[in-house]
Image 1: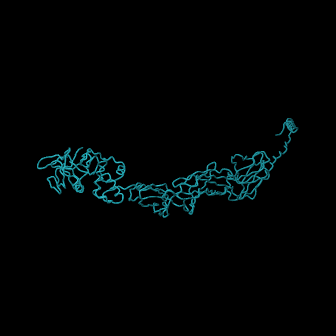
Image 2: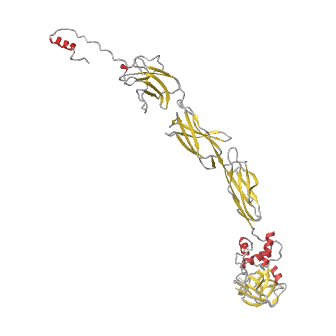
Image 3: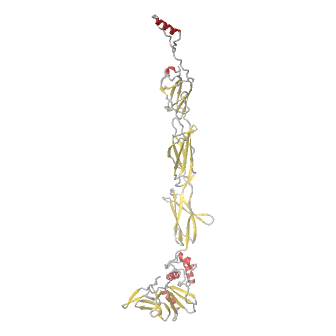
Length: 525
């Protein structure tokens, strides 16, 4: 600004006052001094792009231009402006990020210092730097797993972390790469890192695998891959017996399966011997990864397990223990063996009429078993099973009503048995079928199929077959009018006669002489 107190201003005012005509000549205003140029211009890659830094002696805002393709920067700033990117730690007076830098081709940058941010005060010469593609910023990928061994169908927890230049690298795309041991490699997940550079996922493997975090890199960030982490897969092996409780001489089958499938591989079936596990079979897995083993074992309790040895792509698999209990078999008519012989001897000791003791479960033994069931008030099946075996160890037995020294045939209608007793001792027990208490017709007269109760004696016998209007009576021993103890081809487990006491024909043969004339017969409920 021109001062009004100076000599020149006074002269101009005076001349105007006196009308003097004179020309006003103003001194030339000197141009503003150019700012001192910036120095130390350098460039480096950074997360936001290319970072330009310099030393600025001027207080103003520098002008930064990308002058790629220019012959050289002119006095007037030329090229494309490099905008200021708001980034903490990078004041625009001393640094600038070029977020358009691709690191794929060279660029030339010019930086002018200014006092007021305009070209009028720009430094006469810019700092110039040509930047070619620079080495990418190093990165580091890390990965950890939740376990080094997992059982099939359990997930592996995977945690990864990516850093760049030692700092968390967020927003980057990374891959979890997995390799089946002894086989190929593939990507099982593609993830984006969190702000802290971490990623998390899980995976359910079907084979033993290695896991690795891979960052493929870009123009600014170098690729990296972390250490491989190995997780062994323990296959799930299951076994069971069908049935789990088998009778002696019955076939039981150990059934097993391995998951995931390993068709063709061999499992070892082992049995506990009391001190160690012994391999009893080696079985190849089927196309569905199953196996089975049929077995017949003596009486006892047996523990089995199955082992799948480790392979290239899996660890070893061990099943839980399957238990097989072999019990005495249920004995029925038609079977034979030492257990039948033992049964015959035991029932004979208890005075049941078993017929011939020869180890064969025949008709006589079935009726002896039925008589035992009647006396013990068990189900009248004619079969010898677990219930009967339990009871025969401590039988309730039959308590005679007559204890004198006279031979007596006690007929217990309720339990449907005939018991020969003398002096309070049981001599023979057989099963019978008495009157059904139903109605029947004979000669036009309706009768009740009733067995008379009371005390009687054998008064008549026929050593042969008597054919009556009501059917055949084999070797009958009559104790009251037309009522007799006689053999029959039908002796069911329940009351079914017209009133007589039916016994089987073989028993009738064995008792015919014993039931002599005068033998007391007591019939009661």
